[in-house]
Image (tube, rainbow, N blue to C red; front, side, top):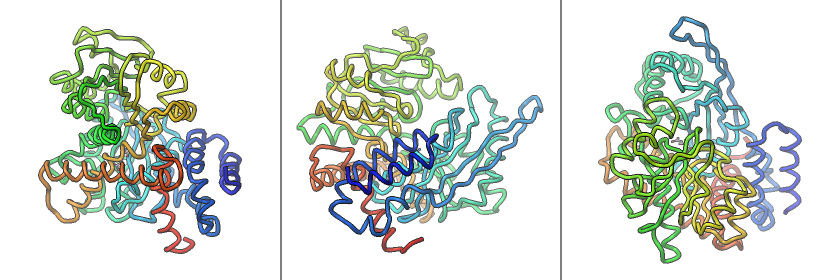
Length: 446
Ligand code: 2IT
């Protein structure tokens, strides 16, 4: 590893020793950049690495709300405005009990490179709260969202910072937050994406992350004269990303056989298709967060407290959350003949799992490349909002497909140009970095 890169990684570890996920994300990206730094001394001269790993601004606040019994409740709210070199901060909000500043810094950092890869003018940001929507009533979720925005509204804006959904934040939450933002500011603007179809949302945005993952997988397979048709797919999660991925993979002729939740995973040998895919939406809106409901309804195998990676499949699409696929899982997948792993969640695989994939020449795509379809379509929603018009479904889907193809080409080209052909990790990190880093140099030391 390049000495400057090593020094910057060591400094992050010393400065923020408790930020485990953030250190993991920084280490992965910076290791990929070693070869770029060797070739291009300007990045060291302008201290780009030190600057790019420090958020431009971090907002932390308390979120008071009242539950249905009238009791006072309190959560912590955050927005990490990481990098605005190529556009307004853009990235989702996550509401989940596991949310910490480390998680949001890792997600915001990944978002910088992901957004750059889309080719659209979007900077990187992420936010959220340790609020857990599970088991909460609509009224409680609304009061929480209103309180959250009552603080956050002053920091965001259509040309400043445009949040969207992530885990625990879907159409309902975006609606409540948009309503409160509009009420406080007296402005109807594209300040959030993932909006409802009647009030500024883009068609295909709900499906976009999952569709994009599958379009990317298809591009990877195509580069080896192969395709998804006839392949068996292991999918994890059952939320928004898994839903879109199941839909599109099935449409392209693959058979999706697993789903997972916090309670375990299901195996459906007949394939998750048709009304079974629609049932994912019902499971999600029930707020129970249990995939066992699927097994009970469709009478298939449920395995408690396990992930689906021990099943024999050709392709794996992890679509649940970070570090959901470890060393052992990777080895099991490889042993069982899986040849293609495409991440739907952010940083799905641990560093050891990634190493196992690369060492074994598995086609592996990191989330920041393969799940960029979600934020890309958010970018398209912003464009439509600015123009005050709405594109038909076919137009949005066509643009999404083109963007995913473009990201695939960027990754392949950068990997090849910097000496590691076929390595999508290096390709994504390098291609995403160059545009942001050069923009930072152009704009001076700010
Ligand atoms: O991780 C992600 O890219 C998202 N949660 C979507 C962000 C967005 O602004 O649409």
